[in-house]
Image 1: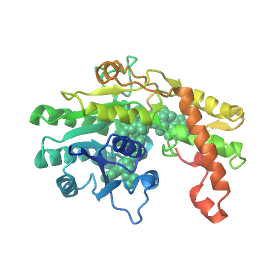
Image 2: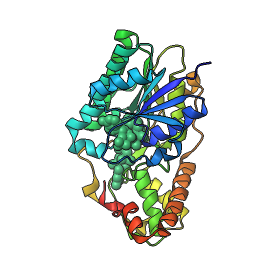
Image 3: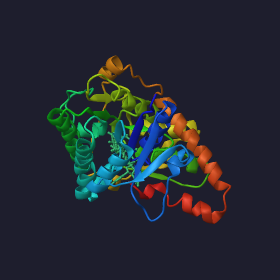
Amino acid sequence: MEKKRALITGINGQDGSYLAEHLLDHGYLVHGLVRRASERNHDRIAHLLDDIELINGDLLDQTSLVSAVREVRPHEIYNLAAQSFVPASFSQPVLTGEFNGLGVTRLLDAVRIVDPKIRFYQASSSEMFGNVETAPQDEMTKFQPRSPYGVAKLYGHWITVNFRESYGLYAVSGILFNHESPRRGSEFVTRKITLSAARIAAGHQKQLRLGNLDARRDWGYTGDYVEAMRMMLQQSAPRDYVIGTGESHSVREFVEEAFGLLGLDWREYVISDPALGRPADVDSLVANPRRAMTELGWKPTVDFRGLVRMMVEADVALVAREMTRDPEERRLTLREPLSATK
Ligand code: NAP
Ligand code: G4F
């Protein structure tokens, strides 16, 4: 039987790397779209490079997307590429709109032109719910985004619905709540906390500056969430799904748990710095994933404490490895104190 071919945009990101592993495990031929850079840096997928094919393309460039889809002729496309860091969307709102809104349109149009039978997954976000009035949030909850990121994602979401309704594409949105892992970018709050806690425990960092400690998120494990992405493209009819654990915790609780695992009292190290706040933040998010559980048979396998432990252990091991390297290499990998980034 012919193997299924998948094209993943953003394969070099956190989710892309886990999804590539997951699809390879399911017997797929995996192709990844990567944008050109002066130097190729594929850290997260280095271990997969013999098993996957990379193709150049950029969400800003329609021609490159049409060419990539023509060349790969995938059965399924997973559109994970995006400007994914919410604070950056306040400083670069137009670029974020180009990537996260129009970029989706360009890719959907490439599907329509090359082969409308290709199944399409769009990485939508719980950030679209924004200023929520009801909890938990499900597929019927009103969208009230609070950041240029959320607004642009909402464009991507609705254009996916629009292409489904207008052209009959099998195009779906996964409205995913925050998901984390040891491969999470170090500017996102969970990884910033676990990496800093590991460095503080090793005596290589003195303090950790954070913004809004009261914000609450529904944090799950990325390995579980990529499984939901594949499941969404195997149904008899296309439908959008909310994916989350159904549990929410504050940033403060995350800090307390992470530092506690290392025997540290977080109050001695963590500074809440209003300068790290956002022009507008989302106070609290929590998912109702019932539709995904009943229709897809999906359920999370890692809970909050398991997730924090996994990330802390990975960062303790990372810091220990880095300390055995020569000082110049170490300077490059353990750059500036994380407190400097939002
Ligand atoms: P990530 O680690 O930041 O990865 C994003 C990827 O997109 C990177 O590989 C990046 O490439 C690529 N990219 C950015 N702009 C591009 C462009 N113009 N053309 C081609 N590729 C481009 O993000 P993630 O956490 O894996 O998230 C994956 C997707 O899910 C994103 O769309 C995000 O908005 C969405 N999402 C994430 C979460 C979450 O909690 N993680 C929740 C809901 C939705 P480079 O490697 O070249 O920078
Ligand atoms: O980790 P965060 O930056 O994630 P955020 O903004 O929720 O966005 C992530 O999840 C979305 C899904 O809802 C994705 F769509 C998006 O791509 C991304 O993956 O911040 C989480 C919370 C915020 O309320 C923020 O204000 O943590 C708060 N926070 C407090 N101190 C901080 C910090 N966030 C960061 N990044 N850095 C801090 O120092």
